[in-house]
Image 1 (cartoon, rainbow, N blue to C red):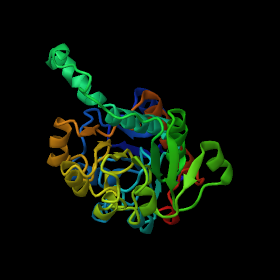
Image 2: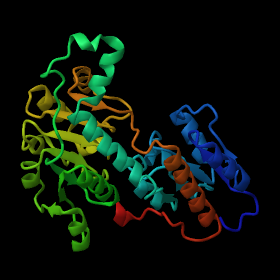
Image 3: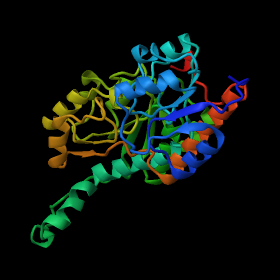
Image 4: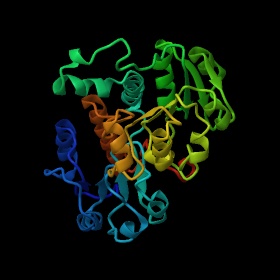
Length: 334
């Protein structure tokens, strides 16, 4: 591909920040999605038949069947986002198609949102925010009205102590939470000491002892329903569950059932198992104030989305110059 004299055809499936789209137009023969509507399966198939580079997002399902229709020029899928579970990376690699992502740039924003959800659920912020426009709240106020839970002094269990998990731990420590974590591998002692973090080799044992659980691990075959019905039942009845990672990490139906039964206190979710569809049970729970639901906003800042776009451009430019892109996805990472 580096020997091509023409600019590579880069097909972008959704609207990106203006600065990113402008730079792409300068560097590549770029086809943009001005309507910002998700591409139909037919349109996505047409795109991969023509493109040298495809720039998809989490809303694009790129499975083996679709990849089988790829044209001979498609050599790079430069994903706009960190997670690549919507792409059959193995099928892409078998066809000689490199896959890249945009790691690292959304760490702080996702950690901010996770901490915000912890506060929103514990202190009933979303529920309270709906009362002012709809009711005269002064008539309902009493010393026992709208009581939430203090988070200072509580135990936070972080499932996945990577970049985002550690960033969350720094924030949570500042709020007076006791940090506990489960990870595939124990983090270095210096990190543990800086966070006052307690490592649990057994996820089951940690879940039974914490007050708040935050999932911050990627979705892989090994983490599908990592918080299964059995594990969710280990939680205290007053426990809070927060998920800003991937919906598939939690058994969503079991979570809803346990909250309905009063066996788990509440949950804050920014991601969903059948995304973009949201379970009607969760929607009903949100209306009762038991659940806070957000539309996948974890990385939704101007800064984060611009940084992600810049990473996409670097990956494309590096690849087209005949070098290994910095954010290449390897089979060992899946």
